[in-house]
Length: 281
Image (cartoon, rainbow, N blue to C red; front, top):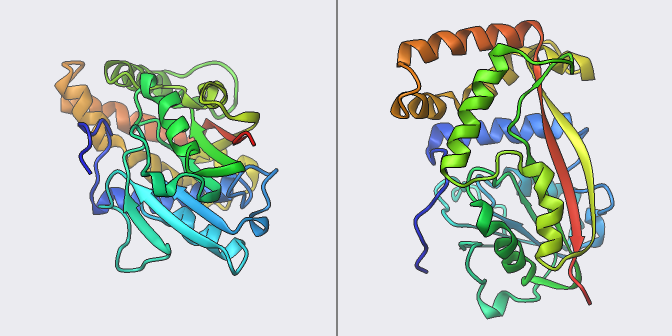
């Protein structure tokens, strides 16, 4: 099918796929193993769609946690990152969620999962995109979305830090230029209601990076591994820094090094909303 110009601002390549796998593992540990909104029992659902599946990492874990007879489909605008040599979905297809799904998929699923699209959906597209996805639900079916705020929060939880604020300023400017939603977690419940979903419920979670990992009992190795994980988006941010004329590559590298030292000593958090809504009967 024909799609409009892709607005996704991060790369699609093997390195990014590895980062997404690591991100999934880190998020799952941060959420205490939670894969969907806690009101959802995966064992109760028989037809599930992992929408915008990326590498398929969530799908693999969800299949293990779900009923043995459940069917799993997966879709994304691009399947470049989906591990086609190790398939875990029963059906995989290309779909741009800013466009309506084919009629034969309407009302097919009991549960649809989607997450982390703050880098790929414009502000004006969100309600329509959610409504398109909701078309695939059976009446009474559930849509669970997980989205994050890009605003970095100091590990101690109080005050600001120059080592975080320079990164916040860079992502704010980039997301504004691309008409993306910087603090997407804050807006998702309203987007879901605007799309026609009912009984919308949200829980706020936090993902730690650097020394903040130790505050929730993660092992020492998580300090460095989480810093590397967040640093995986640094090349894209560096290009934006240089191309926008904000500063030189050398200046970015110096700030990034200071940022990582700050994370080792104090750490930071990112807020996440896990939201569920119901398709009306």
